[in-house]
Image 1 (tube, helix red, strand yellow):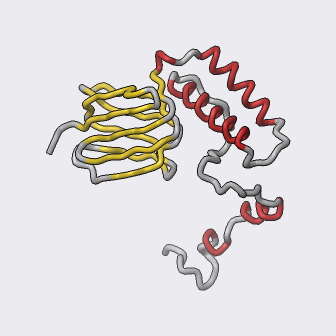
Image 2 (cartoon, helix red, strand yellow):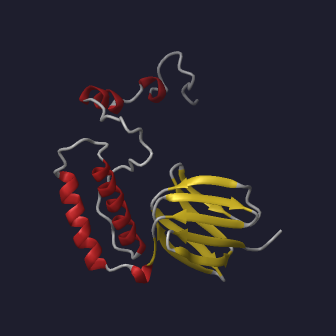
Image 3 (spheres, one colour):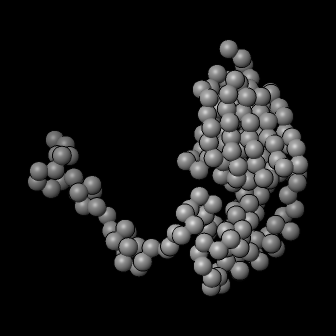
Length: 185
């Protein structure tokens, strides 16, 4: 078994990174995952976030936009629309643009599935990830990723949101009579 894996990050402009690394951690739409040498084949949708890898005992971090990742034969191939390293981030430009994007989203009056709104949310996520990459805390609220939602998705009604916010007593009340979770004695 190999001691390293080949990490390749490819953008529309070509190969952005090609390194032999000891491990990789990346964000997928189902959550963060890690890859070590000998990993089983994997195909996943990549979400905007930070990729971490180790090389010669040192940790390296970079930002990727959404895309796809394929792991096979000790190679982790990330196909993404954008890629950035810490030195690529202009904090003043990013903060200014993030403020503009947030203002436009805060005052959004159109359809929730409008392509322009999706673009703004994806840009907001990318800008927040760039800030996280350089250690500058991102804003407290970054909107949901709508890339994988159905085109005719609608926001839930107020009644649905209220109902969903109520705890399911059957799951939380462990001390009631007949509960499958009896009192510990």
